[in-house]
Length: 308
Image (cartoon, rainbow, N blue to C red; front, top):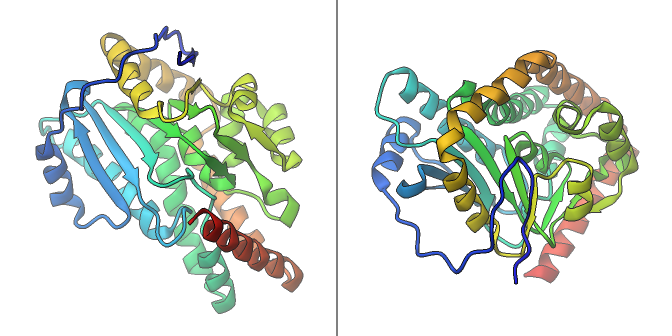
C-alpha cells in the first residue's frame, strides 16, 4: 500500500487510481494569446481542481535553460496581468513538474560557459534576473494571487531545486534525491541561500550548501525542506488531492504565506543581491574553475547517454 507522509496539516489517504483529469483549454488559449509561443513548456489546466500545470520540457538537457525559465516567467506575468485586468480567472493553483526521468540537473552550464567564452556579462545578468523573477513569483504566489506547488521526481540538483522549493508546497517522490554540488567546484547556486533559509533556517541551509552531499527525499523532509514524500509516480496524484483538501481554506493559506513573507527580509532585494553576486563570481572564475565546469558538462552528457 502506498504510504503517504504529509505536513502542512493535510491528512491525505492512499487513493485508488484516479479518473482521468478533465482539461479545459480555454484558459490555456487565453494565456498563450498573451505570452506567444512557449518554448520548452506545456500548459495543462484541470478544471475540477482549478489547477494549472506548467510541465517543463527542457532541451537538449534536463537543466533550467534560459528559454525554459523565460517561458515560465511569461506565463506568470500573463496570469498576474489577467487578474489585475479583472478577467475571469479559473486558476487557483499553479503547479510545476518536469517531463523525463529527472527533475533537473540544475542551471544551464552550457549557457554559462558560452557566456564566459564571449565575456557576455549581460547574458549572465539576464539569466540571473529571469531565474530570480520566477523564484520570487513562486514564493509569493504571484503577489498573493495563487497557491504554488511543485512535484519533484528523480534527481534535483543545485539551482534546479530552488524554483521548486520556492513554491508554497513541494512534494517529492520517494526515490528523488537532492544535492547542491556547486561548492565542490567553487561555484554556488543563485538563490539557494535566501530560499532555503526561509524554509529551514540559515544555519541548516548553510550546512546543506557547504556539504555538497546527496540527500534522499526522506532526509530532505526531516530537515524541513520537503513538505511530503509519496510513492514513485504518485506526485501528480498527491497534488490533485492537495487541491481538493485545501480548496476550502485556499485563500487563508495564501494570506498566511504572504504574512510570513512580509516578516522575512525583503525578498526582491535579497534575490537582486544574490543574482549580482552570482554574476560577479562567474565572471571572476579562473581557467582551472572553468575547466571543472566543462568536466561537469561532459559528465552530464555521459550520464544522459547511459539513461538514454
